[in-house]
Length: 107
Image (cartoon, rainbow, N blue to C red; front, top):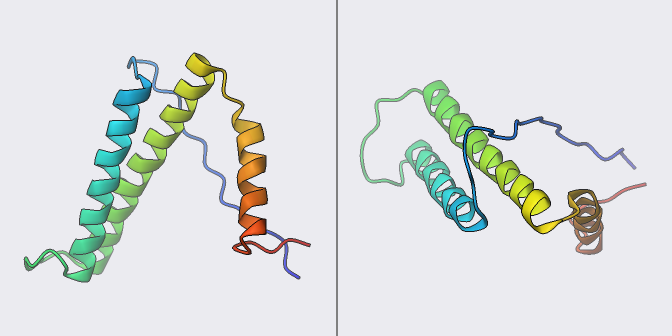
């Protein structure tokens, strides 16, 4: 059985903002919508013709995906700092859930 592959990224705490649970959740939804729009452009689902190359669309998708990731990390900071959430414990539980749902196999 293969070893579990992971993707590690480190994103900063945005220290020039005053995010709240609500503002960050709304921002996460906005960024997710922008990611969906970028993917829609790639798949031609928007109904509009695009003169973007595949490379340009991939760069757009990656930009929007990183915006989603940054906003999710910002929300994690809010949950830790304002509500005492234990992200490490939540991550362990998340991995266990993936195993139980058979989305993930581990040795």
